[in-house]
Image 1 (cartoon, rainbow, N blue to C red):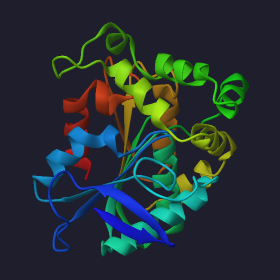
Image 2 (image 1 turned 120 degrees about the horizontal axis):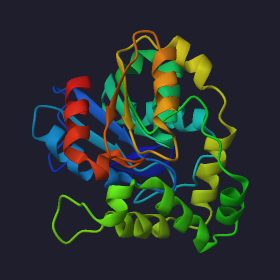
Image 3 (image 1 turned 30 degrees about the horizontal axis):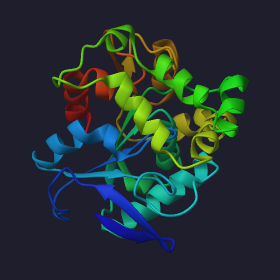
Length: 262
């Protein structure tokens, strides 16, 4: 699905079915340097089980035009405008990592737009190591290597893909390598600079679920639990053996949690 937001052509994957304004909508927001393809398994299920699925490519990412937005609040405003452009007045928003911060900030800034939140791989603060920031600023391949190493849990590092013939770590590496120059650095800097999660969490008034990977080394589960506890009525579920990329490492368990929350 293509739409125009603020003069930019924006892409959203729909899980293989056309958008139907009569159905409830679930919007998916990817993490730093990534795109809609991280949600392929989940969007297809929702699209074939009575919901609209909209996995957006943020500006400058994937198939979307424009320049990557430099702040989490700007990404949240973009998401609100993108949902308006589709005709979805309200949506459940599922965000991963940077996308989880965007989802949280959207619920804070545009509460009428958000009916539920699901936050994967998130924490109250998501600082980025200076060496990773520096490597990303120079498009150094070591930035991608560091993320691929830390994002996937031990089981994924050894194999363990549900789909025969696929390699989770290799696929994640190729995805990050496809990002346009400067996009990964931009996104990591936005995560590092964002300090509004505490204020946003206190303001959230919709049902919220944090989905945590027990083996997440980038945003440890303890940080996700603290974030969920800061949200009125917030809940959390931990997926054993999953690292930071739970929707890829443990797609069935992740889907079960999202289906209940969204």
